Each structure stands twice: as C-alpha cells, then as structure tokens.
Length: 194
Image 1 (cartoon, helix red, strand yellow):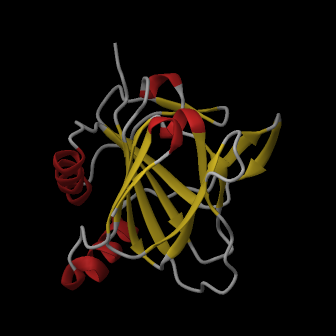
Image 2 (cartoon, helix red, strand yellow):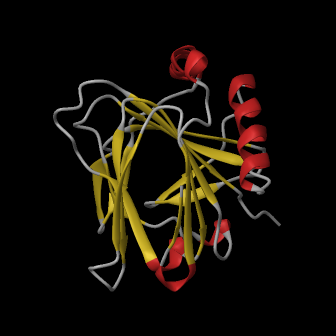
C-alpha cells in the first residue's frame, strides 16, 4: 500500500516483508542479541525515563544525537546486518545504522515526533520494520489537523517514510493497554558522516 501525503510526503507499507515462518524466530533472536537499555531522555528541558527499551546499532562513526543524548553505535549483530542489507535494497537507501525499539507491552509508547536531526540530512528515508505485537502508528501533519493517518503495523511489516514526511509530519506509537505482548521495531537510517 502507498500513500501520497500533502506537502510531498510518501508512505509505503509492505505487510509481509518478513515471511510468516521466520518471524517468531527472528523476534527471539533480536530480543536476545541486541544490547537493550532503558535510559533517560530530555523532553522539554527535563529528564524522563524512556518509554521503551532502545539500542543504537551502526557502522563506526554513525553517531546519532536525539533528545539530548549522544548515541555511539554498538556493532552490528550478524542477523541485524543481514536485515539492514535487505531493507536497504528494498528502500533504495544505503542505511548505516538502526534505532532498535523494544516495547514490552501496550504500556510502552513513543510520543509524536519527527526524525529531523541534522545528521539524517534533508528529507531522510526512514524504514521501520515491525515484529511481534501489532501496534498503532500515528501520523499527524504539523499544521493541518485534518491531515492524519492511523495504521496498525502487523508483525513482519515494513513501513517506509519518504519525501518530506519528517519536515511536515510527526509520528508516534501511542499506549494501547490492551496489548499484552512485546513488539520490536527497527528504524533504519542513513547517518550523514563527514
């Protein structure tokens, strides 16, 4: 499925990017091999606990700063590097890093934000792979309240955000208390270095 958004943004959703027979094993391997941490972030000038566990993985030098924290990349586990190559080929973007997110259940969330940090360059292409529990993805235009989209992202799906999405929209994963299972979300990025 594809959506052409107002102001030049594009979304593409591939629901079966990871085949059903391997999803559970891939989830388990990622859950056990990624160096998950639940740290603090700075939001509106104050320190709060991150509402999910995260890990920053990437090539040497792929440093990423967000929410007042400098993230030095951990090395690629083999399984994640293979996924990155596959996602890069599909998105047409040579990714060199991934922000890994582990939502323990529906109480974990991510507020509305845009991935517009300088090291991502202008109009970055972000590819978001979901495994585990289906969670709601919200997209909201920064100025036009009627320009919004809510999608349920099932396990194995790949959502690609292109064009001006990060300039004109914010996105997030709201709390869903009825969701009792965990979800891993991998957001592949290209860090502009040098």
